[in-house]
Length: 293
Image 1 (tube, one colour):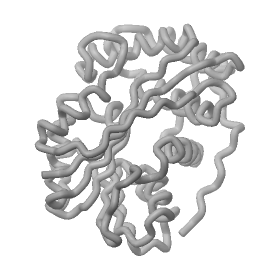
Image 2 (cartoon, rainbow, N blue to C red; image 1 turned 45 degrees about the vertical axis):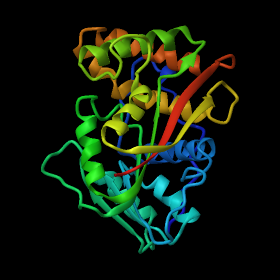
Image 3 (tube, rainbow, N blue to C red; image 1 turned 120 degrees about the vertical axis):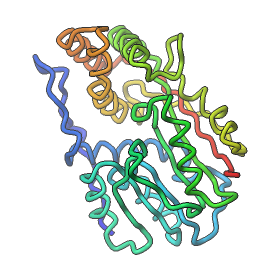
């Protein structure tokens, strides 16, 4: 099994440029960013598995949207006897995961897109399904059907481990303005989870959605990440913000909320303020564990 390299803190600072620089989604820079994010989340969530979750020694675990295999890598160190399947819609990241997890004969990796009806998962196979941060990828009207597909792939009595987060609360004027416009764009495109208010709303929907799918919640934990300047999670947050700002840009521009140039200028200002020494922020996450019927 290969060892992940420590990401450099000398990441590109697009806010210091005069124009917005496109981000390369499939690059070694992005792989390093995802590794750093995983380390922060691993500490915040107290390991790759929730406390008290007991799995059989050779349980079969499915990780949806596995990316370059960062969570599977940590899980293999935590519980090496587990059988693991990682699925991602990007062939690039599946190939990265195959490289980094080479030598682990307990891991299977494949390309799969939850939103593609032509793809399918095996029925009654998995003891645990791990989900994380579906909100940017899966619209609210698709999520129930996607969850049902995942439940079909589970054994009776299997567990679903799901983590989502809301947009942060910060003392940055530009950041708060940008988040407000992003929410307007998301809602205008019919992709939001809350019809009003100033939050994405995904965390409020997790419990009801799972109960409607006849799942029984056994754990429900709240976490707050201090993303202020100087805190351990700050650097990973700024990197994540840079990626999400570009990922969500089309929703804002296509909805007519802001023009592209105005959006880019505000984004650069927000990122610059996030890097200032007096930046303060907090990020709310919710993790739930549910038993599959």
